[in-house]
Length: 233
Image (cartoon, rainbow, N blue to C red; front, side, top):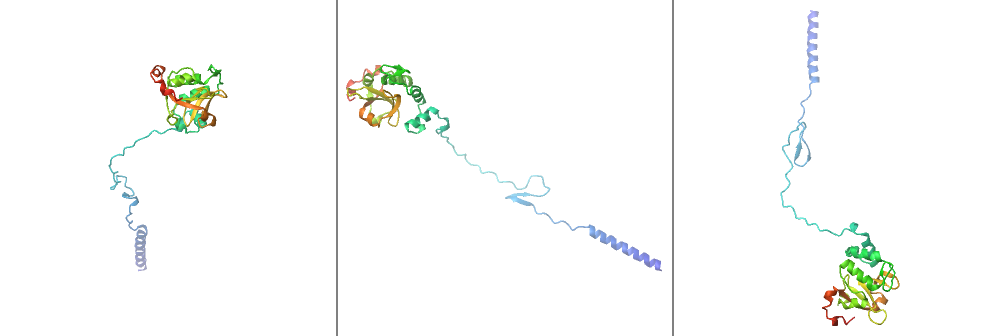
């Protein structure tokens, strides 16, 4: 009898442990994971490597605006000679567009004055203006200051432009000096005191000696100009 009772207890105990073991090994059903959302209208579900159901909206289709590019002055590409003379003349470098003119002036800068001279060893005012107009503008003019005055079209001081001839009466006996107008009341000339240099029409000496200005033309054309137009010099 005891044997049957022991056997019954053993069977019951084994059944209970098996049930408890199954219960301890079983896990509750996993909850459904919510898809992670980190961008508007885009959903990512773990394990889903296919295309998403929701996509970014297409970019609006519209007319591409017209863009106009204006080429501005690039100060870095400006020639050194232009910077140099912009400082000397007190103007913006953007206004010195004729680099050839200022290169010519620079090669002659400081050349001593010599009456009747026309070389780097010495040059006078009219030889310098004659050479400059011929080299830079291709215009031929007579050799002397007085003769140069006779072949120009007179211009008023407020009408002066680059390349115009500026005349002076430095001796009280008519035209005796000539230079070439640049900008900002400045002109280049071969001065008897300092050679080839740039001076200002506003300087006291030159403003008092000023005797008029004119625009140079070819000698052949100048022959048809009424000389009466030039009597104001």
